[in-house]
Image (cartoon, helix red, strand yellow):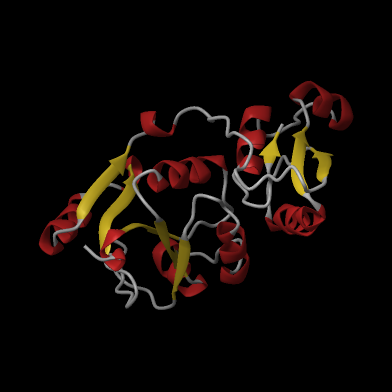
Length: 210
């Protein structure tokens, strides 16, 4: 079987990406190199009836920084969300979906083309696994440490990590819930330290989130 037939595929808008989205990508990537069919702004509008919060270029930039994603394929024209849009360089082996997105139409589509269909349940996505330090860490490089809350993660954080990682192996210390509450007041953080540390650690420019 050649490499083009071994792709694991997910499809969607991935707008305003959150920890649950990263968990989904993480688990899907365990099946093989993960290819994301990323909907354009027009596709998001057609599927949801509203504009995306973030444009395609920003969504693609953030997703491309996620270490579990092998390659992104922007999908320009709206199509039936219950089928995989045709991409010349992708011949899926497995289409992975979340349980809330599972439906008979998707199953029938996969059956008709001999594509494996994998549904990830809520149980599959529980917890926030601690990632070891990146295998790319080098004893000969400087160790760079940054700190922060990273409470509502966005592309600006990714850009910061990308730039700082040029200085050496990047270790990110994520603020403890109690410290952030003291700093910002009640109602903060919006996301737990486990969630924030997990999403920071998913970024390929980060050697390790602490």
